[in-house]
Image (cartoon, rainbow, N blue to C red; front, side, top):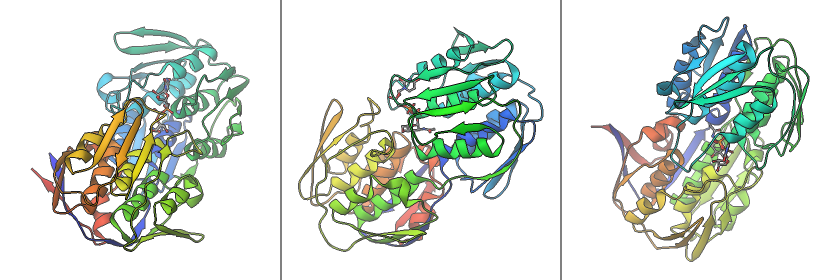
Length: 419
Ligand code: UD1
């Protein structure tokens, strides 16, 4: 198994090009199931999760052609309507095939999902939305068995709380349904807008994506198109926070700075300088101390839960006390014991972590616990004195394209070691 070995203490300096968004790419790939024509995605990140979803789609009979930075997906006919346990358990986003397969084939059998162990993460909202659209749903031996005789029908769906996955899944199911679907209390993440833009380019009629009420007028058929995946705001935020944590100057390019509106003021509050122009963001910190900052995670446009661990790594080194509250997932502080192994002073009580800043972190052997937490350990390792070894890097490979290369190009002393 690979591990990442870091010699800390060198400031970062250079340019990082941001890849296409994992969380968008995964849902866009699933959209190929809705048309018998070719869907080509460009600005595609090359990640374990996207490769993995390619295998799952191939299992349905989709012809998958992987290029450099692009992928072509052709679901001419669906040769299967079953997504087996082995192909779903590793990644929660695979569950989103259920709606499109059901919409197209009027039946689907999909294993209940796995993914990062950051809480219970049920799929009740997904299933209730499909039921509202007329699906019959049965749960049997770890599988969801869904049928929709005559196809799905438009419905008015009000989510009891905001869910990114359930909003996207409902959109994917509703585009080929008969009649109009209205989603109330929908998620507003940029990835939702990206999915709506792609589906609309394919011939869907979705309005309101990016707002709390989304309306989808069902259409009979969607067409193949070429579509560019939106830049990854979480990857961009991760490198911006790494620059603020470690110090130095990092310019992010191929970035949508407007998608990180909640982050920039907080990074500035922590003492880093953020300069934006049309195509790039420069994050710098040269010797000024890190100041403590409180933050709580919220649905977009609030501060993203996917940057919480990376933010924590930064304030571990602040000259005061910060409080971080995690509102989205109930078990997303697994990085705290690992950061503590490096000398951080963190107390977790329920959904809140109190971080008492320390003057320095010390290199240690640590374990990646989930995808985003792994990135926080890398930033902490780069800022720490001595050597840090991050184990279980397969978590990292799920969602960060060539992280050691991108950071290495900025002067970080970081390497991947195969054991
Ligand atoms: C997506 C992102 C993930 C991000 C999260 C929140 C992908 C592949 N993953 O995950 O990186 O951290 O949004 O921004 O895009 N919930 C239920 N029932 C449901 C659905 C969700 O109780 O049916 C709960 C979850 O357990 C969680 C909360 O709702 O506590 C929000 O989850 P959701 O927004 O659905 O996250 P995902 O779509 O799984």
